[in-house]
Image 1: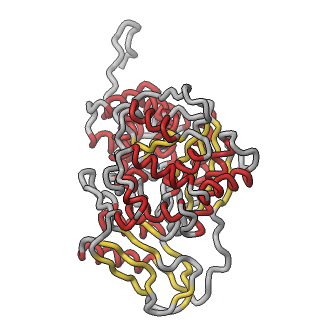
Image 2: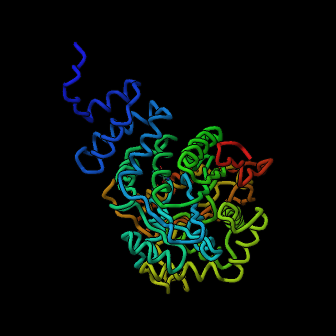
Image 3: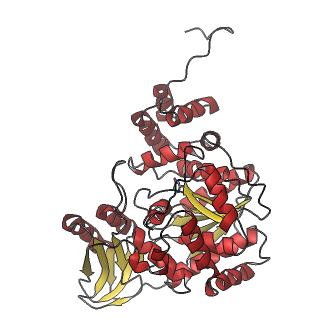
Length: 453
Ligand code: URA
């Protein structure tokens, strides 16, 4: 075939050809990626073609140039907020997804109470992991779908605001995220990087703390894969002139004791009241310290941690959370009295089959059990049950006697709880001796230029 002559019109970019190229290991051009993202966002490319491309991208991977083009196209699908009218530093935190990972709900008010501006755009449950938006929506009336003008108004009033991707901000991620959730196309460092960084770069922030999870409940199960993802995101942030730090943190068992939307909000309130499980509290303090350091509110990490502790112990962080909830339409009576949060009709204990020590908990299985209970989605059209979930009574290293409850299932359906119970039973490993060494909460820190600190 002859090459097209100089005057021939450029051949149209067809989704079917883009899918084939990715499948066949050919690199896509920036124009091809832009056309795919724009076409899907506008509704011209159907779900089945976008899903086929996502699956090809998961299986064959993307090049650095393709990842950059995808991130840019997703970022350009909506507007980039200009928050230059705020004099304080704009700093956010984002996690790559975990089980029982509710730190965003603690960190936004802590950081705002410490003088930072936190314009947080989050996501819903993804795969087996929980989503900040689903958690927030378990607070009756809480609105995560604010237009930009309202988002800015809340930010001006209380320094933090937590919303989802909208038709105005990161609309491409809004659609692709929901599609990836139900098509097993989450576990790709390239797609995760584009999804997270397109949202975060649209926020108009100065600095970003990334919490990159590793372990059996993370999308990146192996530490080297988590480090690769952290470097990819740090590089992307740096390219766009942002200060970025990535903490590789442990997700080999659920964080805290509660998994499930309203259960997790109750645990957030415990932490903001100066209580709550030690691992969750510790990770929140560590991430808050980095936010204060990058935002210029602390000159060392210990100082940042101390600031966060004081803001929690004085009640200022909880007051800020309450204010944000009220400004976003939520019923603050549920914050003052978490017993008013939705709760499930039934509970069911899962008993230990033998005596010994908990040596491991397969964390992804706990997350999947929560999805099965109705706490997440198996299909796009599923509605989430805010009340269901799992309360862990034993964690790794704890001694157990045969018959002791390992955890309690909170459910609204006997058939769903029976399926969840099977998974949970298989996820707990009981051994004669406790594990020799506890895994650290923070495995390592990668700085903004992709170097380990
Ligand atoms: N969080 C996101 O926002 N996107 C992903 O792809 C994974 C975690």
